[in-house]
Image (cartoon, rainbow over the protein chains, first blue to last red):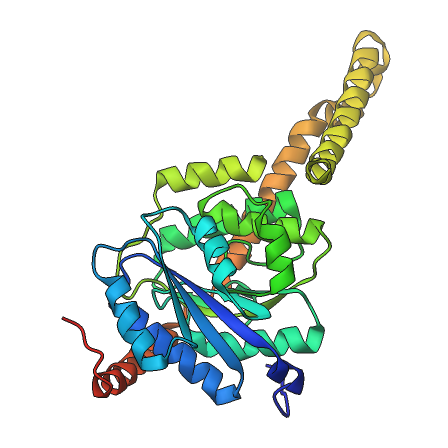
Length: 244
Length: 102
């Protein structure tokens, strides 16, 4: 653990937009928003949340409207899309609405805990890097809720990716990240893949475009609620995406 | 132009692989007809099995690395418990502000 005597003041002039793509997250969304608000309030940094809902049948959009009334439109922006159009396009669309100088992306199902927001910001301000990605695999990181088979699959996949791409990082498929807005803008328009590979491609492309990437350990709590989406199809697509 | 960048690493791997393959094939071809094969059986064996040896060593390295990572894998039960507590607090406070679930 790094002992920081005080929170870096340079963060205070930034505004952070948190992009939250949602699909059927009526239960989790209020809690995520509450925790994000709590995290930013604690460090006294200005933020906004951009909810991108892919027309969830369970009423996630309506819940987002309720939250918007509670936290005001300045803190919560909502984009309602016509259907499941993919994570990448959700980020792009959310990015268009975002007014912050820095962009957080994270999952809205509580697998990513907003309490890690300050470490991301601290790392970025102290190192000056363009991108901070949360790692579950390095010292200080962790995962809960994975059986042995799942762990093995992830480590094999991770090994292949690291060997082929040699990015100097430990976790390539994480989706808990902090970007400088210009960096994300430039990179995301070039990324073409879907699913897990999408997250990998963003990082690899950013490095190719000479953006600096640092890692911050995070704890990943897999799916307290909801079902996992990892099936054989996803694995195949992942391997395909790696090679090409 | 940036597709070219991506290609750089895979072409480098390709180049190295091809040059090794050509050298190996050339050596094998030369040596196979000669008397040297009789006299230097041990070295011949090493050279002939060189590619497979590399694969085996790499596979062992892979298994070792993955094993180490699995061993050091951090199962953080406390994170899950802590999260559940935070959820409880969140639910209570949100209920006060009129946000509830059906």
